[in-house]
Length: 178
Picture (cartoon, one colour):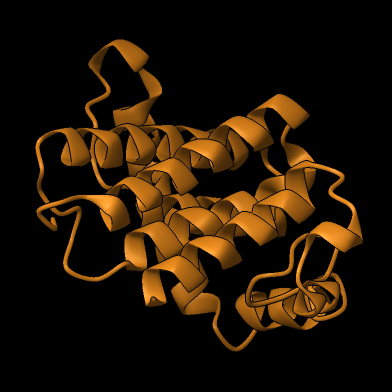
């Protein structure tokens, strides 16, 4: 039952984001979902305070995060040597730094991390193993997608989210359970 509700909720959010589904096709509670992005953990109204905090009171954390991403850039820069790996948290971190800095290097890094992660999730499913015990990696990947939404083309948005939802759905439907 929980997995059915979860899938339904994810598909509703995706439907609101990617398609123009009519309100009659969706449950009433979906009218409370913001239509703009970002909307997960912060939104256009709260972003100025989040950014100010990252550059102020949390500056040490922010700079440390940015330094880790700067070390990751060369590792993921060459597509021919890029291995599938769990990069959901780094996707969200890069998306966050991109929103703060508006530096396309972090936008590109976030996209690479999303692609690498989704390929990893797909590989894990094919091998019938878990990505990790908790879902935090996938939550980070979904946050990165949401935070970058306005900076992705329509095909990128649809492709990334469709793949993320498919991976989650595959795992929820798998028998025996993964």
